[in-house]
Image: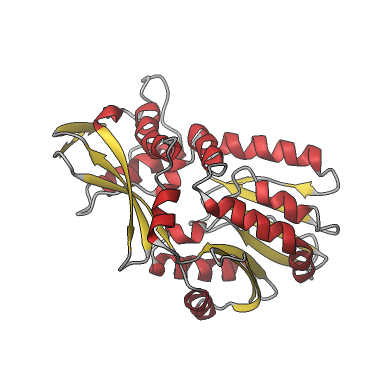
Length: 323
């Protein structure tokens, strides 16, 4: 990518993060199936909208996982043990993490990792005030790329990766398997993984969770286009698109897309994309698993399940694995 790219204002060069955003966007729009990586949902506004989604009546994953955490956090903390550091991938507001931190009395360090710098540092400041007994060191980064964690404070320290929120479902099965292998490498020989994943259930429950009556999820999806206009040299008429989310039963996943309301043209830098009415841009997959299917995938990536916690309806699972 050229180093002379400038921001929409024309006053200063694009940051490396913005250059990567532009590259990924153009790559996705030039692909046979047009797509935008879901990780770009989470700018400051997108992160705030997702926090609102987590409070919606229809969106069961967050409250269901939080209930599992509240009920079983002491046992989870016992599994993680003392002399450990907690590394959270895609930490966001770290809301569920607080339930875990309340039980981890002898935690060495908490390392939240998130792509949204402003949101991450705001959450880290709040946590530092709430948990002065814990060392909190936020890391701005993309956990899908190789991570350079700080050196452990002692040779016998354990690393536990925490990956809540069913984010693993946003990846294809091949990508999820590769991510689990990368987590295994990052955690090391004595490492562990505490991960949440959404379970297969009725289609109407799933589709309602991604098509809420207040339209917050629609705003969240459309904000991706607004972000493109804000951060890049682009012209996209956001009003010409609408939110769409359906459950693909054959693939076992929710598919979220931006659907064009009309024939239109959008511009990213010097590239123009002609889009017909009803054309769709893929923005997110959310795969739903069975416990058996997820366990098999994790085992193939070098993990072994040591504990499993479910809610009474079997809507959601939290699993503890060791390398």
